[in-house]
Length: 51
Image (tube, rainbow, N blue to C red; front, side, top):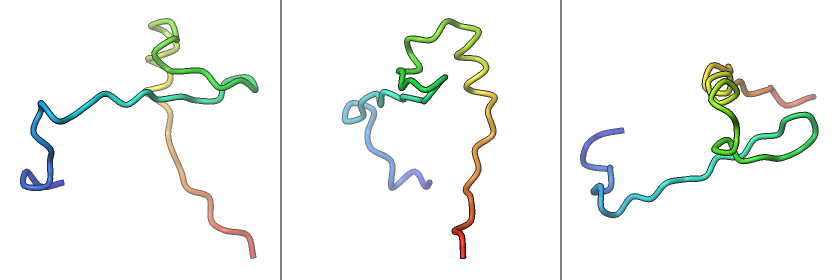
């Protein structure tokens, strides 16, 4: 992303990230520090569409 397309700091707001863990959706901010660290290390992928 180029500098010209970024919002000024005063117009930005935090985004609450939720994830599914053990069948429940939880906000990542509610995780303990160890689980937050584990979440940051996860690899994300996009699965190809089935034919």
